[in-house]
Image 1 (tube, helix red, strand yellow):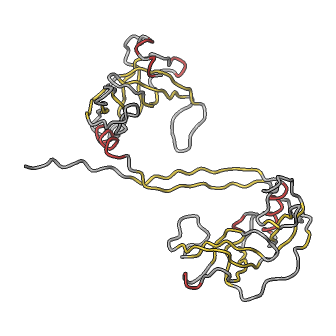
Image 2: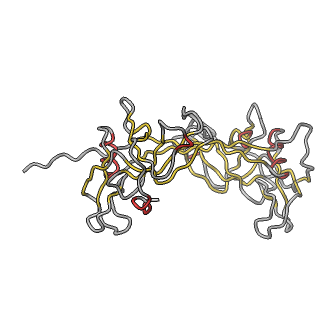
Length: 321
């Protein structure tokens, strides 16, 4: 007896990234402006502690904090972890240690990178100092990294600082958020995607409630049982609800405005997402009957267009809105 080979479960690298823009209050503005001048500032709390990096409200009492002080650019490692394979955008492109370092004069620790030849060269309690970047712009990356240091801790208390410098202060930052990972849709959605490559839409039926889910989820969310019975649905369907898009997305070459809709394919008990084309955006409506348009070599419908049929009666799709 032979067993038919199982289709390969799909996997693909996926990157989610976006620039996060935020404004700065007076305390963090002074902190980042200070880094541009090779000066590390902290803020003093009402009970006399010095927080580095500084915050604008006391984490214990919620009091507003404005009393800036200058701390040293040397410090002591409080804990660390070795990073053997640096990733894109990290401080160093060779193996390094992530460290929490309590700068001389501070009562809290700052997270940054330590340049070291290997994990054997790093230990809690070791002394380190700032290695400043050659070009500084008013960002945490103005500290290029930390490096080992043989000096002893400074005994002088932090000096008060006005928080003002000769140049214009840093008032905002842009943080490039990025997440790299490998996505696997699982067996059910792998079968769904493979069917789309043949211009077919395949869902799965729950053996208990008999609902057909498209895209399939591998299990019925209502009954909690596996959905293994494959059912081909569509290709036509009904617009259940929609929105008009007026903001252009990066790398998406579609003329504005356009319509994105929930579409209940014939035979499916769950609406899927799709773009509506072939009709002026202001003529799209609930109940509009549509069909998929496949681009040459595409693995999924490029968009859906009107079939020319009469609109569906509301009672036929109201449960799918």
